[in-house]
Image (cartoon, one colour):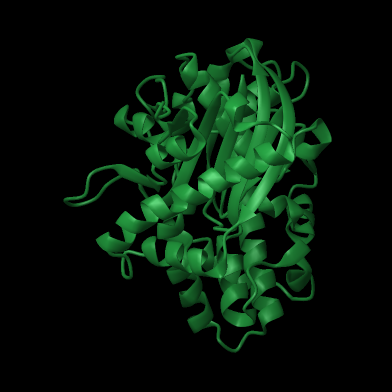
Length: 380
């Protein structure tokens, strides 16, 4: 099957698209990556998404409009990656679309029930491309009692399990999440959970202080000095003490959290504050390993993906915090660190198409393994 996977994450950089050729499913999956492409969000779309994901600035009219507006961008992303590969849309078999997460509430509270919201209407995408779409992957796991995240562990197992080497797959997007794949493991032996902030706080502070979207290559952080007292204070956040399975998002570590940091530390130089929040992300990842992974699993290497894999300063910090492990990126094993999740949602769509269970209850906390996603047929 020829499948395009689409991913737009909490960093709000844009839409990653991966065109893959897949034979088989489950343990018999054979994958060929044909083409990848990124469709960046313009500043106006990014601002709309930030407003819509903030409960203090969102409104129903805006949500209704964005649900369709972003769908046309998803369709454009599909067309661009197929055009780049010289593949006519008529040859495409399937699209796997994660959607854009606006709010994630896996625990619920007071009168609010456990839920998650990814926008991007699959009917618009199916109509614009005349292709079957599988979307809304997280909801079935939540219906089964899980947190709806992380969902990539199933794919991490398919792509990276090894008989001799224990591996940790660390994605660093807006939020960090980890999958533990022990050597010679079976699917039911892997664990996964969110580690905390990835690039989200860094990006928000870069935007506020410098009007740039992110710290390219970690250059700004490399010029700063880390304030260890602040790190100690920030690591008291309740999320870091929670036992896995656990997930988090912009509701914990978004713009509001970044603004509080800026307000309380307004006299710090931009370089120092960016260095310190970068260290917070690296330290939260390393601490998660030390508390929840390394005492129980033999791990040989850390494979990093996501935008944070391009942040040289963060990777250096992570290596220094975990000197006993080899910290590298998924590119070493032939999977682009920038497009790993887009590839993952193409593979998840393939699993759903073949009616395979694709959540990992040990990672999400679901009561049982379930088939993920919803089908939207093409219009004709």
